[in-house]
Amino acid sequence: MRRYRVIVTPSAQDDIRKAHEWIAAENPDYARTWLDGLREKILGLETWPESHALAPESDAFDREIRQLLYGRGTPWRIFFAIDGSTVQVLHVRHGRRDHWRP
Figure 1 (cartoon, rainbow, N blue to C red):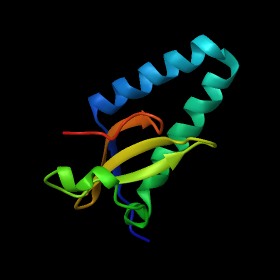
Figure 2: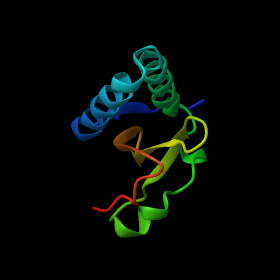
Figure 3: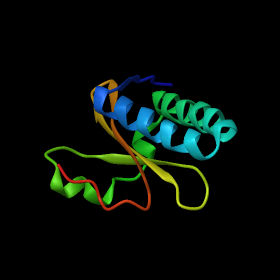
Figure 4: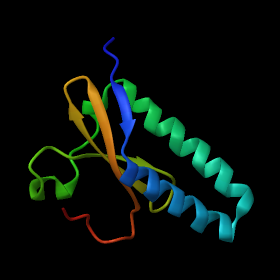
């Protein structure tokens, strides 16, 4: 099975930090569980990242942008691109927010 190298960009790291802070302000116990689950989902992109759907926003970019959904109800959207043997996590946002634009 092919393995991909997963890189979380500084922008996505900032998204995750801000989201974690927001969740922790409301529910500190859940914030750790959320972060651990998100990390597990992102690391899961090491295998079969192309199995995830193209993001609706993909047409606005100069390369294919895929999305991985995380969570129940309205899920978080993890945007990523595949470049050869590397997966770059580009952005993380809550599903209730407007579409992501370049």
